[in-house]
Each structure stands twice: as C-alpha cells, then as structure tokens.
Length: 432
Image 1 (cartoon, rainbow, N blue to C red):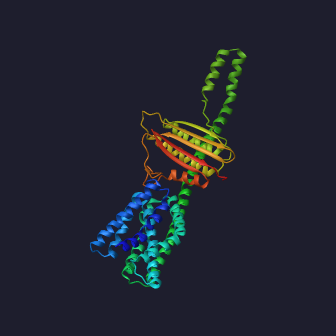
Image 2: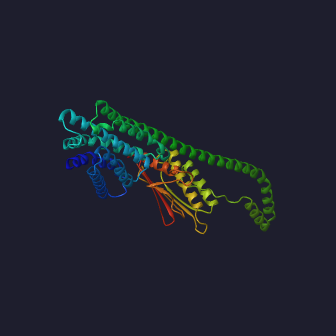
Image 3: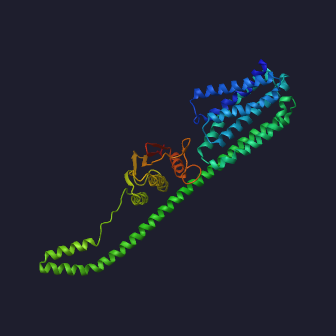
C-alpha cells in the first residue's frame, strides 16, 4: 500500500503546480493559503484512494476520483471565467496523461517494472521536473492571453472542444493502467497535447480578432456620434449665418432710427430702443474646454446632455493639442467615460444632486491621467474585477474598450464604487 500511495502522490500532486501557477493573479486566496488548500486536496484524494483500495476496489478504477476531487478545489480556488478554468483543467489533464503514459512506457521497456511501483512514480516525477519550466511558461502565456480578452459568450461552448477530445482519448487509452499498452496509445496522448497547443493558439487568434472588432465598433460608434455632433454644429452655424445676413439687412433700418433719436437729442427713446434691440439677440453660451475641436465637440455634447438631465458637470482639461494618443482613440476613451457617467447619473435617485467631474491632466510630454467621478446610487455588477453591462448580458463594452486603449498605450484603467460615487481612472504613457 505504501508503494502504491507514493506512486499515486508523484503522479497527481504535479497537477496543483500546473493548475494554479498560471492563475497566480486570479487566486481567491493568498499564495500560502492556496498551497495549504492544495495539500489538503491531495491528502483528501490519497485518503479516499487508500480507503477504497484497501476495501478491495481496483486501483485502476479508484484513480478516476482524482478528476472530480482535484477539479472541485481548482474551481473553488481560482476566480476566473469558468470556461477558461475548464480549458486550463483539460490542458493539465492532457499533459499529465502524456507524462504517465511516457513513464509507463519507459518502465516497461527499460526498467522492466510495473505501473504501480515506486520506480514508476520516480520516473513520473523526473519527467515532470524536466518539462516543468517549458510547460509553466507556455501555460501562463496562454492563460494570460485568454484572460486578457473578455469573451464570456464564446467560453460558454469553446471549452467543450478540448474537453470532448480529451475525454475520448482518455477513454480509448485508459487501459495503460492494466498493462495493455502500445506505442499507438502513447502517440495518441502526445498528439492530443499537441492539439491542445494548436487549439489554444487558434482560440487566442480568434479572440484577438473579436477584440479588434469590438474596438473598431466602439471607435466607429464614437466617430458616428462625433459626426452627428459636427452635423448639428454645422446646422447651427448655417442658421447663425442666415440670422447675421438678416441682421445686416435690417441694421440699416435700426441705424436710421438711432440717428433720428440722436439728431433730436431724445436720449430716453434712444436707450429704450437700444434695450429692445439688445433683447432681440440673447447671449448664447459657447462651451470651450480645450483647443482640440474634436475633443471639445465630444465634451460639449455630453455637457449639454448632462444639463438637460439636471446633472452638474465639471470639466478640467490640461493637455497638449493634439492629444498624446491618436485623436480618434482619445475621443473614444473620453466619450465612453462620459456616456457611462451620464447613464449612471440618470439612474440616480431624484433627491440626490447628480454630478460628473472629469479631469484630464498631462504630465511631461507623454503621460496623461484621466479621472471621471460621478454619482451612482447603486453599486454596479462585477465579475471579478470586470464590470458587467446594464444594457446586455456580458461585460460592459465601454469599460472594456477603455481598458484596451489604456493597455495599448502602456497604461492602466481602474474602476471602483464607494458610498454612492463611481470612480474611473485611466493612466496613459504611450512613449514607454
């Protein structure tokens, strides 16, 4: 029994290292607690394994319990999309299937020992140590790439492809524990691991494509809005030109009245007439926030929208013209921040005075910080550190677009809610 447990320990404990390390930034608990819980998971499995084998159950069947027991702890300890966790879980299972098949092949061909001997366990451990650096690096890169691209709708079904293939190979080659094993079984498992790398590469390319499409859609929407704003301003400008033409035509008549009052010395009538004339042209407020026309148009658009909804909006802009990032992307970023702020304020309780505070400050030649604070009576819905949309299922397109732009220009975007106020902050440093 002792030799069997040693063999099983060497064969199963590597799972925890390969399963958890790629998710080191998404663990629910600190590293030390996670290690202790992984040890607990292993102890539970080995205890169940020993009890059932001692009761007469075949070890080849009891080993299958490792899949649900270790999987339960993985899903509990990692805070990430369940599809990505399942993908990682499948990947690690495939890797360990190849290691165990290779270990058994070496033991049978060269060491002339059985699958459940201590020699087999040590061989498994040596093969794990020889491949650890490569596998940890590759798995971490894959998980980081997949986690950086939020596509929950795709992951609802994407994990089924590798999982199904793994289960098929696992069932077809599971007889290696009985000693019924040939080179074709080993080749099938190695080929499955290669397929997992190809599937992960394809998924990353696919998700990046969707990410680019989402960014393009967000940029297109903002540009359409900017064109709409420009169209409105053009119509307003055209109307003002027509008004000025009429004013110039009528001015000669007004001038004649003014001259007549002046010639008669009738100052009272002159003052009354000038007051009436002045009231014909009410003062129109022209909002000017910065020198950049496109950015000023976006800011003016949302300022007017906020004013119509009774929202107090304060804007502070201290930056160079043009912005440190392309003008279109800066408009997308600011537009998404203000659109989310206006929507949140519109849903705020009527008795609360809603406000939006936008500050854009440039430091040096490239670093730009943007903060947008606004009232929000209820806390938004979160999934991990990601915001969920209030308009549709899944993550918020606006906030994810902001994150993408920040990451593209060596920056960061953070969002939090506290005491009825939503805080958004973006840092950009494109020349890093």
